[in-house]
Image (cartoon, rainbow, N blue to C red; front, side, top):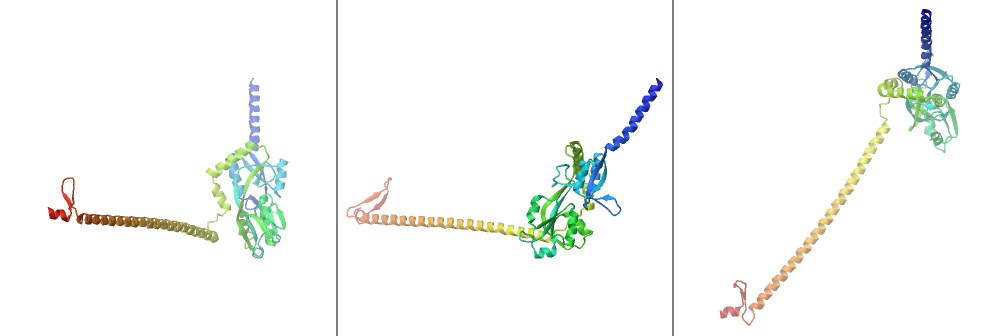
Length: 346
């Protein structure tokens, strides 16, 4: 009986020891990444770094996972690795992807801008009559934006960062770029590059985490952790380490708002002046009409008074000059009028 107990205890210990690595492995996530500074890249020391790396490390920690990253040459290679089940997730998938993968809520959203060489922009405005070459990232740009460029030739890139290099060497004239990628490139490797933003209010690109369709339980866990990181975590602190928010106001934008406000004030003043003049004119017309009516009534009253005076005088003369004596008395017997003959006879 004692041997049975010892055997059962050893078996239980073995099961517990076996469960420890299994549990640890089940809480590990392998993510495929592709080079796209400042979101995800290999730094000079050989370590994987970037904004999305730091954000997902925080998300994984909140969800109870350990993240491991594997670098691939392109987004297509990342998708192929996911299909071969070499990885669990793809980090840095954009909302414009056409791979039909399930995605989490966005980790980060960045504006898209149109950028061109300054010399080219000064000489050839990018419209449908110009001859120019445009570059874009196929997984980060909506088709409507691409079609709106109306370029003669297009160069498609897996990496938005690589488009900055093509602009630098003159292989493309205009590019659709992620604003964060552009700022990072101009602050580092391509500092001093002579390019100009032609449209800074184009659209946005949303970076998410992608997984195979149907993995709903993992998506729910990650989405909950992303929400927790945004609401109660250090999301803003992590973002500020990589993205410098532009606090200075563009003078052109400021001038636009000032002129707009002045124009609005002028419109309001014009409307107020017009309404005020209209009301003043209506009041003047109404006052003139009332004055004319009063004057007309006064003239009628004066005419009636004169007529009554004339009739009264005529009546008095008739009575006074009558041959027969005449006396007019009131109801109380008081004499009101008596002609001269009656007065003489009396």
